[in-house]
Image (cartoon, helix red, strand yellow):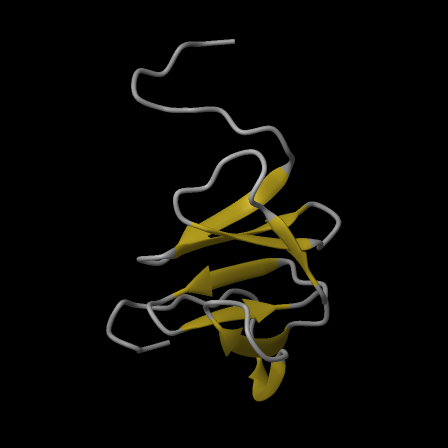
Length: 100
């Protein structure tokens, strides 16, 4: 394994990671969703209900798409439930200004 100055390796198997100001979200190759409040360590990751292939977070919400290209969103702090949003996407991208 290579050495990366200033980087800390955290165990797990996330295929996609996104970070907001206070939270980090990720999905595994099997669609499992995890989040943590920053700073993230190996012990403060929480599994979140649902299944997504990709997600992206802004300062307020996290948006994602599932294997059927359906769109979902929820509060970036993990509160509440996934809300289905009309339409279909292969990939979603969120900005820090609340634009999707």
